[in-house]
Length: 294
Image 1 (cartoon, one colour):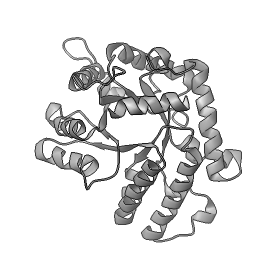
Image 2: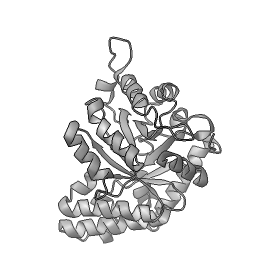
Image 3: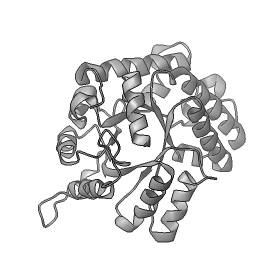
Image 4: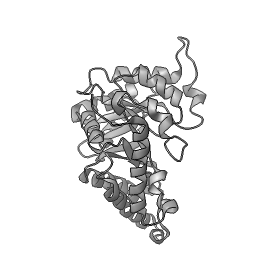
């Protein structure tokens, strides 16, 4: 099962780091920003992404590719998104498509086909927005079961205004994010692998450590995708309670802190990205210790 394989890759690399390929054209070094048209910009982004992947593929288990940065370049950007995902997979990385798709019924089924279908984008996992309820998630979950894929459902997000909705209390005393977390745990019931985690995971931000600690205890079978490290303010100490015993149960994303590391460190952008990923691994291990599968 794919979540088991991701866990085994994390243990192998001793690194629960996911490199976010949220690649804005402005992140590229100046010498790569000479392109002016969308097609040329997309080609430059793809070249940048490939070198980042080459620089980190032996030390991290996964990349997260945020589709908005590619949609901004239109048809050429979507081709770049697809080629980036495919290249990362060819280099042995798990690919999380960060698209936060959400709809109901037949439309949700089409979104699921786009990312998990035989002719769709080459990815292993997908972020989805579960706030339309079960009928907005069921088509994704079903295709995950059929084709050994996985989901990460938005539960407690890392953005500053997330509490405007997610922290509200329901009549039964739960917060909205706790309710969503309970739904994710239920959607994953019966789909757990040998390490006890289901193929329906949760997005739980590093910037809300107390909420993450409560969710980790509440959702024992839910694997976490943890954004917010680095540029958004999260650090290893803040997210240590997002993990279960043995450093299990989560993967931490870092985008700008790795993609733009060369601006602080100097040298090549891909060499600086590798150094930043190794430094992040050391930071996480300082609080998680050795990562071992239970």
